[in-house]
Image (cartoon, rainbow, N blue to C red; front, side, top):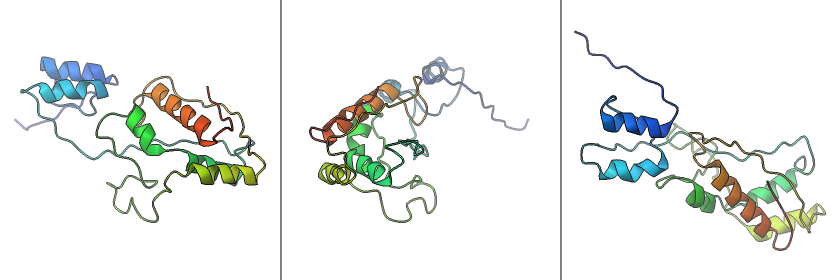
Length: 175
């Protein structure tokens, strides 16, 4: 008999872990963040870490004001502490992206890394374009977790809090 592998699609990470514990599957990929500790504590399971290939991005619709202004987009990018968002809303072991492509991809880390957060420079850039007092905007995000965004609400909440603070008196708001 020729050895074979059968792949079974299961969208729900909790169900994947349940099937692994009950023995109806031999391996799973991408445990839910809340299941990692339980898997590590189970002596019958072996966790084999792998580099992730998912990258979460914050996108702007640059067809509409104020995001049609490159200076505004740069200001927001400088006002966001990506590491703090990763710490607040992604599972332990998540790596902060430094480039557009994951570094696990050959040449993925080519070019200069993304800028470090600089709220003062962000405020200065907004003042340059006449928005020293900030502006109001809406953050839209998916309600359901995705592989690349395991806790959308926590991520949006952390982003919203940072944008409110980054202008130091100026108001950015999301919903």
